[in-house]
Length: 86
Image 1: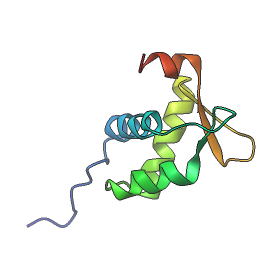
Image 2: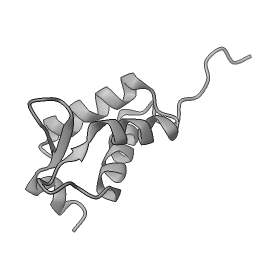
Image 3: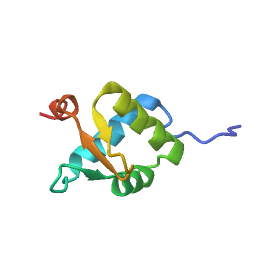
């Protein structure tokens, strides 16, 4: 008997990889920023939770791949993050 459902993005590395893939697939605005709202919605649409999204964003920032705008509304790739997809 199973009491917990399997979470497709329950593994932090899988969540981080999915977050970066989503962010890489978006077109940045004129200032090179990506909307947190759009990334969050797409992340949740693929089966992720708010908690998994938050953990993935924190991990991407800790690795130095993304930065968050002071308003919290935008993410931007760092040079190291952009190089992952070059």
